Length: 111
Length: 110
Image (cartoon, rainbow over all chains, first blue to last red; front, top):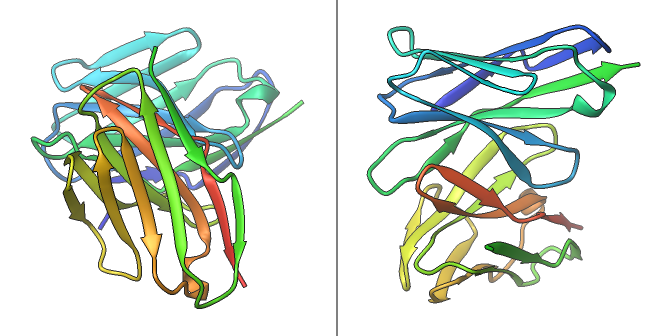
């Protein structure tokens, strides 16, 4: 089973709106990360939040982490067409630094 | 700076043919290396990871194998491809808390 599970699976919004997606995980973590994937490309690291942090910002990105609920959310504010991509959460699940990714949320931002 | 190279970008292979995908990392030493597979519109499935030369851990038993002949080289192989091996294969390396991905190989088995 996957360590990270994102929801919704797909999200379609208009430019200027906010996009929120969630990630749930099963085991204890040291940190949780969000990645972005443009169609047919590799993943690019967006932001990391450590287990002792509750919220983190980077530009138009806001990430929250609730370790009691084993969940995280990624908010993209004032979305742009260029934000169209798939977004994945990832956790490190063991001492070897093995990354596990969720199924992702496909975000489509229409002008 | 560190870079990761993965090739080829696309590959069309007949069923039953062998496969060899190569991934190399530059600018770092002793990286953790990973092979992932991504079905169309789906998430990433971890196939293999390696913490050192000759050290391979398999996550999913299947038709594929991996090898790490050199510190910064990771190879994904198959002796006989199946239709179900089609997908998007991604190589990655990790440094502490961040993963860096190659551009991926689109494999179509026909």
